[in-house]
Amino acid sequence: MYAKCNSLYNAQKMFDEMTERDLCSWNVLISGYAKMGLLDEARKMFDKMPERDNFSWTAMISGYVRHDKPNEALELCRMMKRHDNSKSNKFTISSALAAAAAVPCLRIGKEIHGHIMRTGLDSDEVVWSALSDIMYFEGGRRRGFDLFAELLRSRIRPNEFTFAGVLNACADLSDEEVGKQVHGHMTRIGFDPFSFAGSALVHMYSKCGNMVNAERVFRGMPRPDLVSWTSLIAGYAQNGHPNEP
Image 1 (cartoon, rainbow, N blue to C red):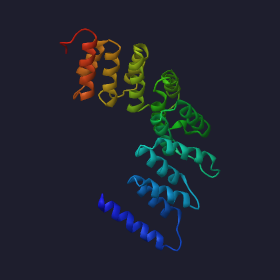
Image 2 (spheres, one colour):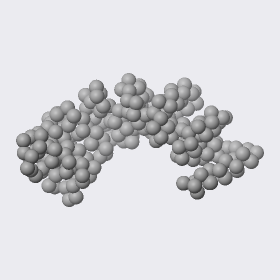
Image 3 (tube, helix red, strand yellow):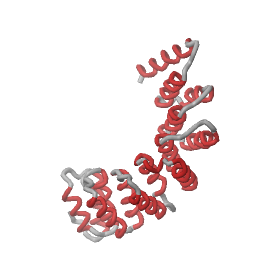
Image 4 (cartoon, rainbow, N blue to C red):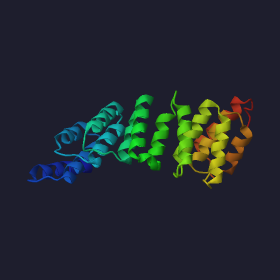
């Protein structure tokens, strides 16, 4: 850490001595300060910039999100939206969605979703995974199912985090029917059931009381993780079989 701080100090010193500063030099410093959690310094640099690009906005917004300042991140998102020359990319949008999920605020999540659809960013799986996070907290899960169905109609292949988000929503709602459909889709496209999403499958079936399927998925995992074990044990206990598995 000290080495990194020393590097930042040297970078700042070099920056201050430059007669001409290009956009890249501003971005390097802002990104460095933001990653180290020196957000006040990063913001001072950001506010002084003569011009900004996608990297500038993303570095600052993601810095706020990474260091538990989602409200500041969302404030910057609004500022970005008003900025005539800025055009958000998938990384900026993903950071904005992470901030909306951390607050949490479904209304802001929906606004960002509208922006995604208008700007054509709906064709990227990074954005879809981030979008799934905001739509699966209380009050937004059904909308999350709609988004997942929309994703399946597109050409985007869901990744393990998208599947896990939908399956966790199914578990929270005890909606085994939708959970089975998701499981079936995973099987049809040849998705590896032993990945991160495999634990979400065990959790979903356990919460829905289908211990036969929960154990079947669990037994098929070469190295069940702690989440899988906990879900299976809790499922048996909640369904009247405390001595299993």
